[in-house]
Length: 424
Ligand code: PHE
Image (cartoon, rainbow, N blue to C red):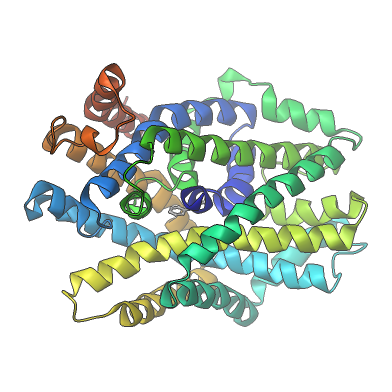
């Protein structure tokens, strides 16, 4: 559940609908699902196994398993990726907190579509206020890591995650009753294969890495905390299924509403912030549903930021060789993150750049590094083997898994890179 809490977040509810909207809806969905099958399973398993085998976070794991420092660059890449993601992710979390306070005061009641769009622009344009709202989740995340209350959070997410799903099901039910919603369903489910371009493939791959939290070491930590008896394959499948369900459900809510309200699916990052308040107005208890939804969204975002910040905190703590304790590391990382958040709030280009470069380049590179590390460098079988860390991967499945790590996944990532650079 904790790993699912890391995976399910703004990537599913904020990013997936807007990226799918910009990339042809159903055409994107198909490529996305292929990416989830191709990359999701082997890579989540790989991160869990690295963590379970080494008992370490992304900082010490590679060195512990390999016995030398040749793969330490991968730890650095993970840490850098975590920082850059946090830079823009906290800003979007800030938008959610801002919308939660506005839902509480009933600001959205009676606003038209046009006003909702300009409302979002006004929220983002008020930089000092936005900065305050973005620093708030940084402080909350830092507090969780400071007081080490992760287990409490996990228990909480066991209740809140099903509640979020239930809430989304209710919203989908309401949206599907709107006039014109079927056009949105067609947009999301009826694929036009001519719309699959190299850019669509690249964006789908990036979204898959981002949404499943793979390629930057967050899940290595969760693997390290796994009980010895836990089945890695089954856990990975559960995380993937839950994460993908939430993303598809978000699409089923957003696109029918977009078309029913006469909006453009290519609105970009503001898409869900314009559509969601309008959906609540159509529901039976607009105030209650908007407050509940935005509160759950903020919590879903926080369970992701906790896993992101943990990567950086563990790195600083361990890289200092004990000179910096956990509390000092939390403070240093928070200060660094706040500096990046200031940049992202102030300069929209940097916000967009961090978003693109992490998902489309850094996470795929990190993932490829991990595949090659486990596929080619580590012993496979026997007491010391990677597969020994999990009783769940038996003979043939183990062979297929290793072949995927050695050839299939790295080759697919390279092909998609070359394709998007129009080299192929
Ligand atoms: N997967 C998270 C989401 O979809 C984002 C995330 C990426 C979290 C990488 C941790 C690591 O919101």
